[in-house]
Image (cartoon, rainbow, N blue to C red):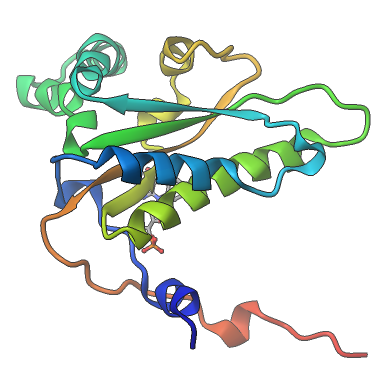
Length: 191
Ligand SMILES: Cc1cc2nc3c(=O)[nH]c(=O)nc-3n(C[C@H](O)[C@H](O)[C@H](O)COP(=O)(O)O)c2cc1C
């Protein structure tokens, strides 16, 4: 078995709550970003943009956007909950937001463009995990909040968050999770 197959068989996401926010080496981050943008993309339309949320921006966006939006939907919320929102992005060393930005095309449907944005998320995740980082693909409530799309310069009427890729260090190794029963989800068509 080659190393890539071995890695794909064994890799696991580490949840953001089991991450230690530390430091992502610049060279590693550049490699993760390069792998993230090298994905299947029908027509090479690049219908996505990546935003690297790091350092102070993790706290600022939590404080300015998540707290405000969370309060609007949960007016009776507690100070502890607001603190959680304020520090949500600080669970990771770096969070990469992947914004799906569809482009008009006469033949290529938007659904394919969205799949390509998913492939960006997947590649970012795999690249980070292959370098030994804890990583998780999250959407959580704020992916569906228009303010976060505006913060990233997107248009909430057309653009969508494909995912936030949280990257940090592992507080502990994750347990295995339930995996699909291959017989149930894979069918062979042979004639
Ligand atoms: C599009 C997408 C959004 C996700 N959003 C969340 C989320 O908001 N909260 C969560 O606990 N898991 C979420 N997950 C699931 C985890 O990131 C991850 O898939 C799961 O923990 C198992 O990952 P693994 O197969 O890499 O170990 C999401 C997965 C995908 C594909």
